[in-house]
Structure formats: C-alpha cells, structure tokens
Image (cartoon, rainbow, N blue to C red; front, side, top):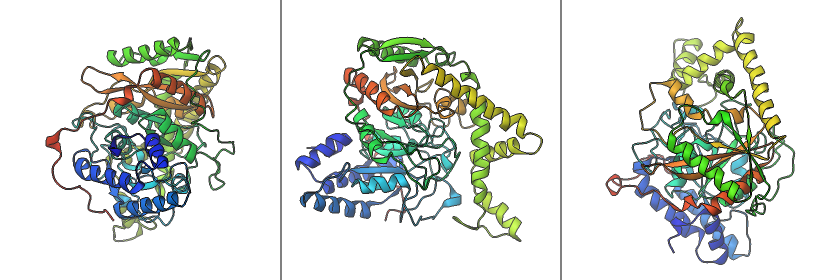
Length: 498
C-alpha cells in the first residue's frame, strides 16, 4: 500500500483497520517532503523528530485499544497559528525566531484528536496576500505548475496537501485565503462561519474577518477536520457557543429540492471563459442531482473590494502596532526608543507596510467617518444582501476565483490586480456566511478550477453535503499533480528542522 496517495479519511480508515501505522504514514510524508519540497517550498518549519514521536505515541494508543477522530493522521499547520515549541513567524522577519509557549485553540484540538503535527507551512506575511509571494522567506510554488502561484495567503498549506506532503492542513481565511488557494491547487477548502472556530492563538491580521479553516483533498477530509476544530472557546470573546454537528454524518449526497442561488454579480467581465464554463457546468450538475437553480442578486457586491481594503488594513494597523521590538521577535537597536521601534518595524515587508499605511490613514482624525465609517456601513449592506438571498435559497453557487493560478511574479508590481484575485471570496467575509471551494474542472493547460458554495450562518453541514454530492458525481479530486523529475534536486531547503 502506498500510503502517501491516500486521502485523510482513507488513511484514518486504514489506521483503524490496522492496514498501516501512523509511523509509516508520517515517515512517508517526511520522505516526500524531503524529495519534493525543495521545488514546492510549502513548509517553513519541519517538525520531523516531534512528528515521529507523536506518531509512535499514536500507534501505542491504538495498540492499547484507543481511538480518536484523527489519531495518527499527519497534518500541516499554517505558520499563522501558534504552536508550542515550534517556531511561529507569520511569514515575517519581525517574528523570526519566535517560539510560542502555547498552542492555538485549533492546534490544541488537533492534538487532542490525536493528529500528528508535521510542521508549519508558508504564508504571505501576516496573511496579507493572494499568492504567497509576500512571504518574507520564499515563494511557494503550485504543484500543478511550478511556474505558478498556489494562491494565498494559505498557499503553503494548500500546496502541501495538493502535492501529497500532508493529509490535511489548516489555513486562515480573512478575505478568501483558504478558498482561493484551494481553487488554485485543486483542493476542498472551507471558511467556516466567523466564530465557529476560535481565533485564540492565531496571529491577528484583521480581527473581525480572520477565521481558521481546513484544507483536504476531498469534502469528507474537510468535514473530518472541521468536526475537530469547531467549538466554543471562552478565551475568544467572538467564539460562538453553538452545538457542533456531525459534519461527516451530514454527507448523505442527497440534494433533491435544495435551492441553489446563482448571483448574477459573480459572472462579470474579466472572468476567464474556461472558469465560467466550468462553474456553469457544475451548477448544471447540481441541477441534474435534484437541486433547484434560482437566480439571485447580491447588489452591493461591487463595493466588496473597496470595503474590505478599508476595514482589513484598518484592523491590521491596530493589530500590528504591538510589533515594536519589545515583546516579540528580533529587536533592532537604535539611538533611542523611537529609533529602535522605527528600525524594528522596518522589518515589515512592502505589502504589510502598504496595508498599515492604508489602515492608519483610514483611521486618522478627519478621515475616519469618510473612509472607515463609510466602509462599515457598506459592510452592513453587503451582509444584508446575503441575508436577503438566504431567505430565498439554501446555498449560493459561484466561481471561487475569476482565473486559474497566475504566474509567479505576474502581479507583484500591480497591487490592484493582485487584490482582484479575491473579488469573489471577500464579500463572504464581510457577512455572517460560510463558504467552501470544491474542484469543478481544469482549464486547457491542466490548471484546477474551483466552484464556490456559500451557506448562511452555521450552515457548514449544508454546503459540505452539496459539495459532497457534486464531488461524488464529478470526482475531479482523483486527478493529482505531477511534479517534474528535474525539479527534484538537493536536500530539503529549511535549516530549522528540529
């Protein structure tokens, strides 16, 4: 059995049957990382020794008759979530060398479920980006085409799962940073309802928008991960105190009578023809499975991009004020305190500086009402659009991204073009909805295309089942990327493996 080709739920079943061991599966992942990640560069830190120790402990627990939702399953974690004893940099030089003394809530839940933590995956600095090119360390490559980006900001997690370097992974989604990389890398990626997963231990970007979400090769993989990380956490004041359903049990595949809304505002000029064709074909497939297709309108969608890029930078400006050379990461000494703070904050990369300046300006005296205050009012209108739509439909279907994965370097000098990569994902984050991306085909060059399914507040089970029904009928996930042999050279790139 080649355990490296199994999905997360297939591996879990194999472990339960005794067909393989956690040590074997973990070693297989580590071997693949050494072989492939020099080309893909999905991991920032590889926790190889601790991962094998966790795997051996999982095998001993299973031998003693224990079980757990993810017992012995190797998982990767975006380097924006704190991990006790493993460096957490948020993809930034300003946190280089920072080793948290505690685990983020979502990581705690993984460990309690028996998961093996393989390491930390690359991210755009402080999760600010759509391509993982804003990482202060290196650019992650898309396993489907190494000349292209994997999306962002959770591009490292997406690339790791797509390349078979982890069975599942956690990312964060502030404006589309789970769904867009999932689309680019041919995965299922889910952004839960805000508050469904605690933000405790997540390095903050925009506190009213950030949300932890899972990546998997299949819908069932994502359902299994969400079932573990969802739940109430009193340490996070925004955490929802609501029962956690059995997401896997909800995957019946029966969507007869499901009302699927198609928003006219999501099929616009600029969308690639092959993307639109694939998404419309996927909607037709949902209809063939018994769903009722209803045209809906989200009239304030056009304001999503400017609204997001006022609110998110404003919150980032406040959150990142704490990085002053005193409490976290390196300290660049200066002539006095002000000079020290200035020199230390110069470690921020260009995109982070751009957003801090935008946010500081939007919050400044004389401009607060004109910019930030107006953005908050627009956000309420966008959220109301979704509320009204969900009075008529159960699920909204749309493209995840207007394009397939673009080339590395193609948009780095054009911030607006880069921001437009999230034009179909970020409106959801401004509302109380949840959403996922599921593969719905490939373009003429073989790059994946994603179908976005959006649900009302706490309706993750509903969108997961709709995605499962589609995936069962059209199993695009069975196609796997092939990394060219000439790219597999040298030893694993990181110097900080423990």
